[in-house]
Length: 185
Image 1: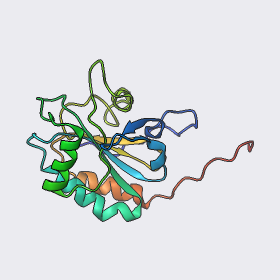
Image 2 (image 1 turned 90 degrees about the horizontal axis):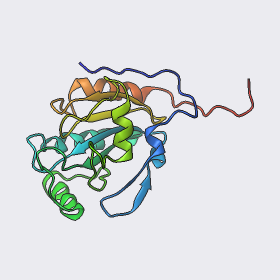
Image 3 (image 1 turned 30 degrees about the vertical axis):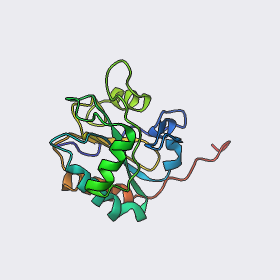
Image 4 (image 1 turned 30 degrees about the horizontal axis):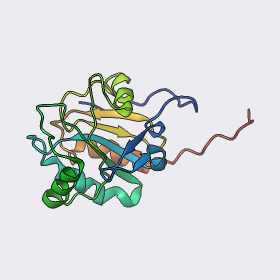
């Protein structure tokens, strides 16, 4: 079971998920810094996968917790079994039409290999169970409000399972860390 594995104390120079940029399905580039203060669930998605119905659970989580500072970030990928062959426009239409997806969806990316997106290069260099290699579609990374990855979950773990919901709720209940003041000892 992948539990919440907190990394060592964060130092301002430590990299975080918030250091990266990605293009939305619309083609507009977005800094993930805009999600500072939110708990995130980052997921690589695919439209023709046995796990595709997880979109429903991801959307349910988003709807239930977004008012508490939570967001799902979906990153379509065609890296496993060519199960995401569509264009960004087709992916967006599929997700909206079939699952009512409202959570942020990003342009199709490579989550492994030579052309791996920088965010996924970072996620996969983190030690397991916090990070580690992406093994299939719908692998999930749980991120705290300061952008630090605290856990990852394999594809088979459903978004609404207690294995995800319990640590998600704990992160939402935690106090938002205050930025450290400069020049204090």
